[in-house]
Length: 399
Image (cartoon, rainbow, N blue to C red):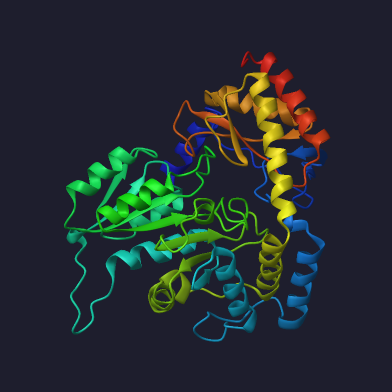
């Protein structure tokens, strides 16, 4: 404990310990934070479904009928009918044969990657040896993917961010191994999209499996909100698709989408599924309504992208660097940690809730404001944020 106390003391002295503000309202564009009303530009509630009246009503009814808990894991007593209905609805959204849900997206990744690569020793079947397998992961993949890879004995290789030539080099050097390529669909800190067509083509060439973490693309990309795979018209060509329910779906939870065989295998092998309680009934019921809304209300996505385009055009006009963002995640590059913290504090003082992201979430010297836009923001709210961003940027010498 002495080491921990000394480490915390040093981190606080350097001003690196995060300020966790207290939110006292729902995840809407206008929120109450630390007792004052501010405009929020940091929520993952991209389509506004966390506060949608229909979703809320469904969640309430689910809780009234089934209570606050399913009372156990899915394999014991927790498999209430809402769980299976949710999985069917998500399978339709993602355009796959089957879906298995987890308590969080983090648990979905840590449940699938180790089990997919390690297999199981079974009489009459050849064993999967770690030394004969390889996980090939993008340099900027989410922390849950990194941790999932660490949970397995399978060796891993990291390819430079979105660099298909580097990916092919690694695949070519390991042609005889059983390989899994893992990538985010939309990268959570930069907002760019993985070059999935090229990844899929290389996977076919070198006989590798492909897994996409579609946390930030589900609901936002694709004609029907199906995510990165639908966006690139690659349905049926990606082996494993992971998704979260805490972004566009406006709830909490995670899932793995794919073939019936994959899902059936995970039900008996994914430890984070087997040894965890099922999603609460109210959550499952709300997610069913949210998934239906994503498929039936394309105007939500249209409103989101109108707002994204407005915010990006304004930031470009003001001279900010958005690091090549292609989505509703719009990083505003700042650089040093101290300056990023000061900018976020100044913005909050002027009514804009836009915290900075800094080390260790990103490398030192690469701090940024991680701006996210929602479908429910008004044009006036976006313009107000841009006005304050411009003024604050000039004050701090960022423009």
